[in-house]
Length: 82
Image (cartoon, rainbow, N blue to C red; front, top):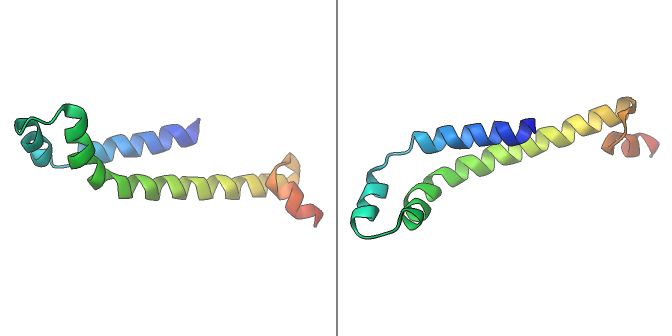
């Protein structure tokens, strides 16, 4: 739950800071809001989102390994057996 809210909050903040000029231009050309978002906002936000999501995933794997190693089960338990 924490990871989802963390990544979601950072995604929301990055969308909020994007320059809306391209979005408004596409809307004035007749694009729907969905397509204007897809082609104007998403390419700007996507690298930041992927970076944050991968960083969070790596942290979750690391935390699971550490907890498992000290006895809480999970990935670390398997690593400790070998």
